[in-house]
Image 1 (cartoon, helix red, strand yellow):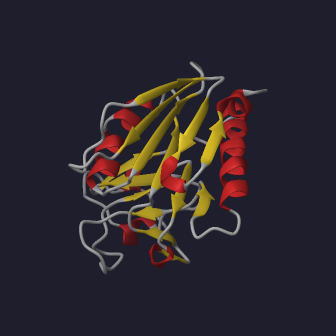
Image 2 (cartoon, helix red, strand yellow; image 1 turned 90 degrees about the horizontal axis):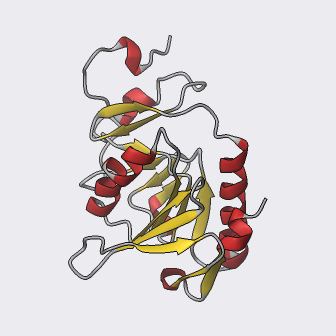
Length: 195
């Protein structure tokens, strides 16, 4: 019988534990600490995610990078080649782009994606700006976007020469955002935020 973190007290968790938890429950583990995810994302979140995915997938068709949408496990660890029992971080970002296909396996992505998008909500905003920001920066995610649906804004964090994220670029609902990391791609925020 599968058990979830609620029944295990304060212990630290691994990806091996995560694989035993009920599929109907959604969890992430960051540095061994389990975080319950919200129920299925709402309609607005799905529309934003769908449009971002559409624009990325259309542009990346036939190119070496691949885009994936949640639920899709991303395992992050300080070293490569760790067993499931040694991996203490697994997250499910809303959208990821992976350009190194050796990081992809049947379980998802094992290593840092090149590009991550999180669509923030009141219940996830603090984690998106703190725990996940630190996690993605530490593991070398080259570009991290945080979408704020209620404000119709986007924060774009890019890795600088020292490996840290610089000051974010902020975009409003009707702008276009270039993604040099992926070539000549421009994301049309007017389409993303349209209803």
